[in-house]
Amino acid sequence: MKFYNTYLFDFDYTIADSSVGIIMSFNEAFRAIGIDYINPSEIKKTIGKSLFNAFVELSGGYSDYDYLLFQRKFMATSKEVMVKYSYLYDSVIDLFKELKINQCSIGIVTSKDKNTVSKILQKYNCGEFVDVIVGEDNVQHQKPNSEPIDKAIKLLGLDYSNTVYVGDCVVDALTAQNAKVDFYAVLSGVETKADFVKHHCDVKCFFRSVTQLIDYIIKN
Image (cartoon, rainbow, N blue to C red):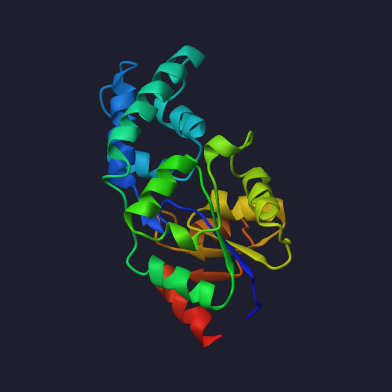
């Protein structure tokens, strides 16, 4: 096993589940532009993508003005429900502690906004373990562009060769590839190993969840 001194994590479906709040926020926002209901299973498929790309995929093509209304309502609803209805996976705090024992830096690189992620971490009293958070509001170009990972590494003052990005979807894998860092896939989201293979993703290891990742780190 290669030693990494920097672990960067995606958020949704990698270390946390915010799907209930996301679904509520999406459907409230779509109602603001005259779309009554989007099936939750379809919304879940877009988790991890930028809000704009998810909007385009789910709406089937609306105007810039529609997106502006959608975005405003989404953000307003999100502020009310997202932290309340989000939870960290059971083993995440143990994972963070294990990485800190190994003197590793920890970052979160996500399509969520930084403030929401910070509040969810504070809810679980584990914000102290995370050295940097890069959200969609901290960059000009969203995943799979390399900018979010580039910014995290720059803020940490570390190097690419000892960094691994951990995520649950193909977009995460492509982001790591574009940033030229290694990638670990956790299969706790809606995408499968076959999806990564189909898109020719360079995945160093597959894990069922971050719980299995802890065991892997300890044993190696």
